Image (cartoon, rainbow, N blue to C red; front, side, top):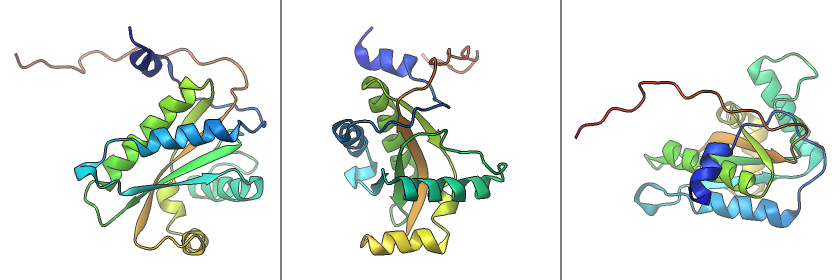
Length: 175
């Protein structure tokens, strides 16, 4: 089996991270993998916000918690020190699919570097909020952007979960 397929089979969503920050070079490689994801008509209609500032990361965690209705004191990012947020340009009809591919590439890249990751939802709802629109404005990002997901990344705290059994009757051949 080749390394890419092995990574696809072995990667798991991690729900417990150590607080230590991974090297910036690793984060940059994960981002680069995301930027090389396929996109509709090659338009590359996605952006990535790399959050490594603890204060901003914690603010986003609290917003995400409130949106989800999760009990106070719970971190939806599971302690991951790095949050890579994918946003899609709503002017492009494939932005949601393109953003999903970016997320998939980053999840696999993190695994390939020995880091854990998990896709955390509610980026869409976060970027409806004025404070998040303000962040985009301060960064000089114009247009209508929709949050696709958060790729929470860090060192795994504990064991890698075992894979769930694959459901049956998910492939149908037309030969």
